Structures are given as C-alpha cells and as structure tokens.
Image (cartoon, rainbow, N blue to C red; front, side, top):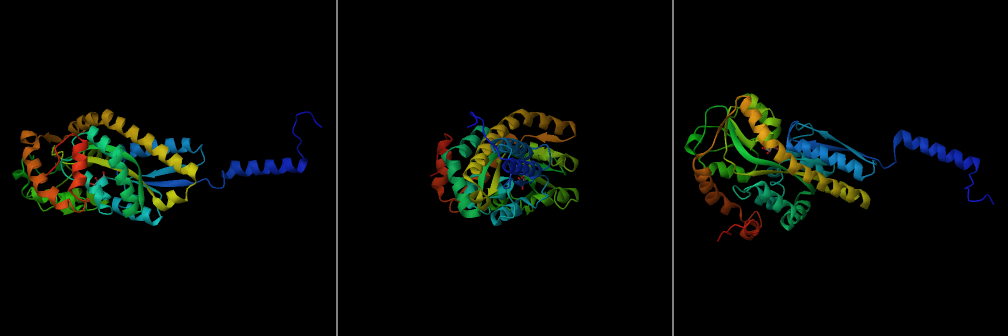
Length: 341
Ligand code: MLT
C-alpha cells in the first residue's frame, strides 16, 4: 500500500512522457487543418463569416482542429468549389447562394427576384424550417451541407458608363451576371441580354471593359475593390444576397460525432455574427464607396418598374425547378405576403 498516491513504474512514466512530447510536437493524431475557400476579397461578409467560424470551431473542438481561409477565389471559382467539395477534394467553401443554385435548383427560391425584401426576411427564411429543407435538398442534390449563412445585403447594379435610373437606361449596357438562369432571365425581363461570367473572372472583365457592369451588394463591391473600375451604382435591390458556408458532405460524414457537433455549433455562431456584421458595416461601407467617387442613383417609384417586369416574367418560369409554386408560396406566406395564384 502507498496511501492514496498512484504508483508509476519507471518504464510506464518514461512511456507517458515520450507520448506527451510527441503530442506537443505533432498534436493529437487526428488533428486536422481544414481549408476554407472564400470567393470574395478581404473586408466583406464572407471573410467575416469565415473568421467567426474558424474562431468558434477551434474553440468548440477544444483546440483539436484548425482551419484557414483562402480569399479571392484562390481555390477556384465559387461554382468550382461546390464541385470540389462534393468530390471531397475541398473541405469548406463560402460563396453566394446564386452559385449553389445550378447544383441544387430548389435553392433558387432564394435567388428569385424580389422575394426576400429585408435582412429580417433573409434570417427568417434561412434559420427556420424552410432553411432546414434547403439544407437537406443541397446535401441530396449537390453533395455539400450548408452549415452557416452570411447576410450581405441587397444586390445593387454598378457600371462604368452612366447613371441608370430606369429600365430604359439599361439599353446598350453589357452586364455580367453569375452563371445562374434566374438572374439571366431577370435581366432579360428588363430587355438586357447579360453576359454570364465566373465570379473569379469578374474584376478583370470589368477592368478590361469586356463588360460594363455587374450587380452585387455594397459590401461585396467594397471587398472586391470594384470602385476602382466602376463609378455608377443603382439601387435595384432585386436579390438580397445570402452567402452560405458549406462543408463537403463526405467530409462531414467522416467526422466524429463530437467534431460534427463542433462544426454545426461554430456555423451557428458565425451566422449570428454575420447578421451583426451587416448591420454594423453596410452603411459605413456605402459612405466609404461614395467618398471614393461612386455615384448612387435610386430608381423611380421604389424600383416599381424593375419589380413588376421581373416578378411577372421570371417567377413562373422557375416554379418547376424550385419544386412547384407552393414552395414559393410557403416562403411568401411565412414572410406575411400574399401567395401567388
Ligand atoms: C457572384 O456575383 O457571382 C457572387 O454573388 C459573388 C459573391 O460571392 O460575392
């Protein structure tokens, strides 16, 4: 007997010390350093969401894992990152919802023009049962799981040629859009045949004047330094930009239950942070863009002309791909608006 003191044999103690030393050098055997692709540059909502996710994930996993952001499309165009995550060659990606829609068409309900009319609408739709259904559909269709949401504000039109305040003013402008059928059809409803272009090529396209304009939220315009190549902004506000954080579904399924919980909890914490970030930053960033020389125009009658043309022509074209008009009606009703007949 040795009272309550534990007894260590010399050999056991040496083995324990050797193991601790090895762990100090290399960390636990299963420790991982994950890669997070980010489409936008620094200073935007995507980076803010990514940083908040990493901080929370490292904490939630008790320091067992780490992750690193790769900004500015370094790991491929946003649409490529969906493919790569689905194949398991990329861990995480943060990208605009419109760049997931081609892989999971029901997500298109969130890119239909003039459906989401405020940050509150965006939060309600993404964080309730509608969001849960879209997450499940995306796992099924695209092999990626949405685990967090960034909210980036309304998409506004920018161009390098002239102020635009009406649909007629768009005539003759060459506008870049994402490779997203809903957005392409929306511009067509305004009489423009837009140019689909990958996000990672858009700055160069604007700089080299392959295209005159594009649309994205103020925060994204700022993060991408578009003020260097664009002067005129029009508040067409046709889509409220929602930017999910996705994880490769095969990676998610390979994680331990504890790590899955850490990923999901960190995604939730980052989502809450993103909402605060938008509220705190958007107005300041808009002012900063004006101070850098951008000119902002409000379309007449609260965008009535843009709204009427786009909703009439575009919504019905996509009822089938979003899973039926009832999917849109579920959202409209949840947001306190009249369903379509
Ligand atoms: C796009 O226009 O392709 C995206 O909205 C860009 C983004 O991810 O911010």
